[in-house]
Image 1: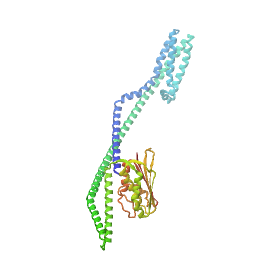
Image 2: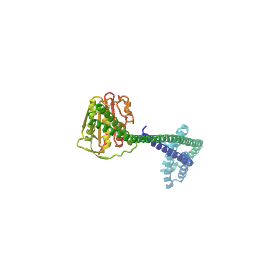
Image 3: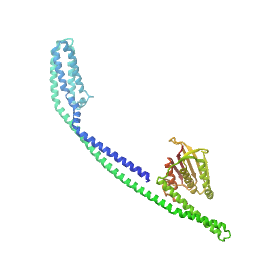
Image 4: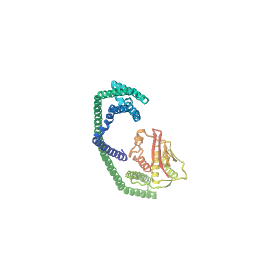
Length: 452
């Protein structure tokens, strides 16, 4: 796991831990509030049912009023009151119909439900006789008798329903308590799970924090080693180069030396070895600076076409020696782009150099163009295609890891930092790199870098 991935994971687990803690605190607060308001909540749950089961008693009151109004006839005010009171009684019977809360409860008991409907139908007959009293009050005594009998029926009905009413109240209270108990148990379980969850992620966070610290220490130690290695060996190597050059000049100035040719060969070999060591040290030093985050981008106007041709030409001698052709096709001639010049040159040298290094026959093609990907950001696209040894899918997954080298390199030199450095530089510059490869067919590397 890379250093960036470790840091990101630690931040993610830390955020999840704090979020879990906030959820736990919220649940505890809600449960405490629910306990404090339990009594008020219970009354709110019971009140509608209490009102509904008192509907029979509320019918008895307007029925008594109807009796009084009938006795007052033919008083005109009594006639007007009669219409209103009859409407009230009829409306209170409507709550017993299905489709209402009380009606649905009563429908579960067919006998009681039918009694309620029959009582309602009986009042409808009385209401018709009340209407007839508006024109002729001769039937008043009959209506009074009917109302008296109706009132007695209501009393008997209310007495019969009272036990059911009590049982229903008890059922509501039990149901409410069970629901509240279930809710509390759920809250407790959730709170416990949240605590375990939070503790788990806290431990994971500590683990990743330790891992991150260990990786930081390892990077610092490696950077220090590279710096010391570079410092301690650079001076003697430079001296070695100077002595080798002096020896070569002396041999060239003394053609009479019999062994001059062999000495010159040896000196040239020393020179090549020293140059290789210096190149290795430069690579180590560049990678150390990238990994330590000591690289500062300096954006300036760059002729990318000219830079591509320069890098290609610098590698042409190596390509010619291997018998492969190297081609450059740039669609951006006579155009300057604002980009980090040193970083772009390092990217070009590494990806084109790798292509030449791992190609034994065929060619290496380099193209440069401007593209507009989905982000609608103007990007410089560098594409390098070769006909080299190619890579497996497993190797492609590790190709950007530091010091990674494929097993099928055939003794080709290198330290395995080139593409790792390219990846660092591309990420810093806000771009992306993609690699596509097939065994024995070649590799294609595409780099996109935002430019102005």
